[in-house]
Amino acid sequence: DAGVIQSPRHEVTEMGQEVTLRCKPISGHDYLFWYRQTMMRGLELLIYFNNNVPIDDSGMPEDRFSAKMPNASFSTLKIQPSEPRDSAVYFCASSPILLTGSSYEQYFGPGTRLTVT
Amino acid sequence: GQQVMQIPQYQHVQEGEDFTTYCNSSTTLSNIQWYKQRPGGHPVFLIQLVKSGEVKKQKRLTFQFGEAKKNSSLHITATQTTDVGTYFCAGLLSGTYKYIFGTGTRLKVLA
Image 1 (cartoon, rainbow over the protein chains, first blue to last red):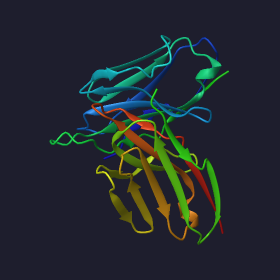
Image 2: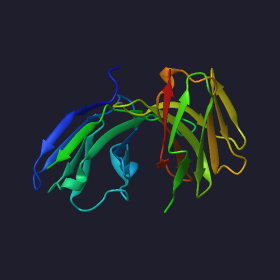
Image 3: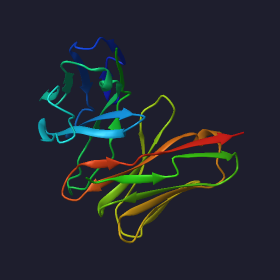
Image 4: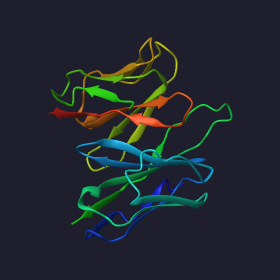
């Protein structure tokens, strides 16, 4: 298995532009998570999906951020319009679910390093 | 809101010395996971602890979950240069699949 795939790996854009980050989870995983990592705030959960349905988006900073999961193999995180304070590394992670309902380890993608100038 | 703090924030050790990082939650957790992130890399799962007072070992690494399920620790015996990275704990909030990551401890090992 190729693991969680994210694209692009690096993105540099100007303030006000729309940014779309993409994620392909590991096949068969039911949960997908989007995280943001900065030096100041650490690793923050933005939103997570279960079977393509958003479950908790309370970590999404503001309305400029939106996430979708149109099918089990693809998710996007969109920022419109982008601002310099959005500069960070954005990680996507996926997780399977045991039949017993126990939580499971998260497999992280390589991340997208976003720079907004 | 829920917070998970880790101490210390940074730790420099000589190769061969021991290392411990502590994780403290403001609320009781369902379980706790530990991850390692190498410089420039992504978090990689190390272990999960579920039971109160649970202790697990992986070679030189010892993980412990507190009796009240609000704190945890990771101890590395005789550090090696390959142990360099940032160690995160992640606590699972009850009734959710929402993990709150700790602030991380960055370990440097001097050869």
